Image 1 (cartoon, rainbow, N blue to C red):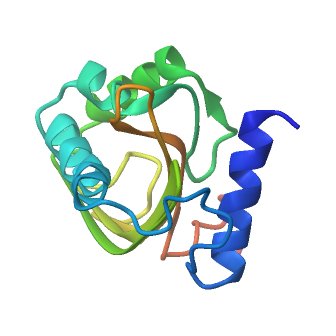
Image 2: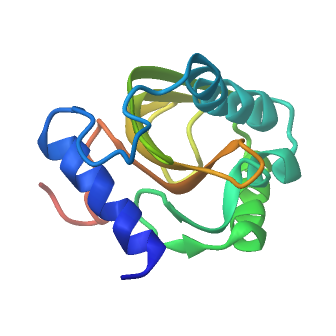
Length: 167
């Protein structure tokens, strides 16, 4: 079994057990340094976006990470993710907020769930601001750092109906 599938299995077991540390290969309780490093991802992403630094944003992702923004197909790999953040940063967005509500770890993998806000919203959004929820999967790197492997979010507001059609 490949190591990524094995790690995904550990995460699935942890999720099914409500975060219980099943199958965590001797590392059942996350270290405080792991928790600090994993918790730093969201504030670092906010700083990168607010600071208009797409390369700093992309550096928070694993080399083969997948970004899954609303209304778009998957964006794969750091270079494509950097191009996405560059496009978003030049679209007029001025402020991003991420409010994590949960972080769970099992061995070398973790997930974070929370809420986000963007102001002003991207040009394709019908209102002046956007809010929603997100989930991020993280993996411990060989150097001990944590990087995002999957980043997915969705808006709380419904999408605008296509022009000329009523809901």
